[in-house]
Length: 435
Ligand SMILES: O=C([O-])C(=O)C[C@H](O)[C@@H](O)C(=O)[O-]
Ligand SMILES: [Mg+2]
Image 1 (cartoon, rainbow, N blue to C red):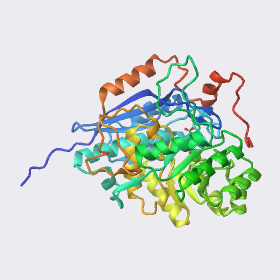
Image 2: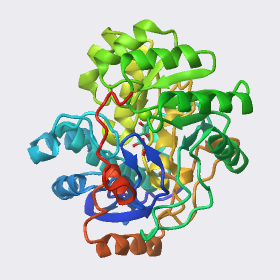
Image 3: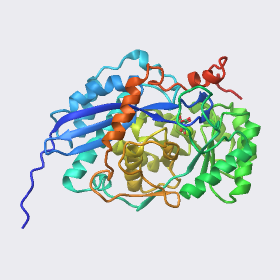
Image 4: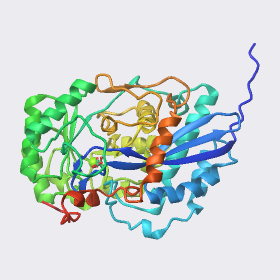
């Protein structure tokens, strides 16, 4: 007989560590990625000595909320999440931070107070689930009801890209080279396939005029016949342009992602094409679902557990999508291994996951883990180790935090348009529709 161990899961401390992580010169419709991007690493410590890990966006507006929300977690049970979420509404959000418009830096859809809170709560939730799982000896997927698959498939996230950040800008070097035309995009896709085994490809568009991006997707289709392809201009096109691109690429696209901005425009595009539309911009909160689904504006919702409010909310979103016959998959923004582990655990529990999930992880040469997660044949194996199955490298965390401390503030809020102005002083965030 084993003696019961003491498992006091009262949260005694929450450690919040902002960091800056290296990011290559990846282009999108608003500009270029900064050489370093902010993330927030969360550690939840429980009375039995367990530490759980979480990760989320690290811009100032998230950091401002993280302190007060973390305070509300201290003294609770790590498993007391529903009440924490319910009571979090009482934490005030600076209204200057929530314009209601689409977020300009990271292209993450509408900004609301609720979404900002959820983006922080998600990291607390993941850290609590990690702690509970570690303490009980159960993987996070088991706490979510159990996995229905042993591996989770991801797609290669192709970007137009400069070889490096502008001359004179402090940055880490990368070995991906430039990709500014169809040949460069295909070469990048080949590297993704060689290194990680990905078999579906998403191209971040909205960077060059649509005909150039159509040519790049055609080149991908010729180089990888039969492989699922996606194009995502982040709402940069008019309805008319979206319909033209859909007509020209309809035979090779798995789906077109956010061709036009907002539910009404997406509904018009959807009505005029048989190509499925996916979104991580017009449906990013539960409040946006009703109109979008009623108008058949989207056929696939790309969840991001950070702003949807965690792993359990992602399961709820998947259930709503299933109810309405809408597909579900996963969006990604710049993230590290803690979040990739969290995404993999929840994706493993979603029954109808019919599209490979997005992940920026291959672009991140730095991490805070003792061991990086790996892709095999384009997939991540679902860990059965307790919690998320990852361990923190404190020295790496301290080094990346030191970089954040040393920054004069200019990189602490991701701003792709400002990063672009370093190379092109006249650059302004393009008005949409851009084409
Ligand atoms: O699918 C998406 O829309 C994204 O991944 C948004 C990101 O912000 C991406 O455009 C980026 O990081 O440049
Ligand atoms: Mg997208």
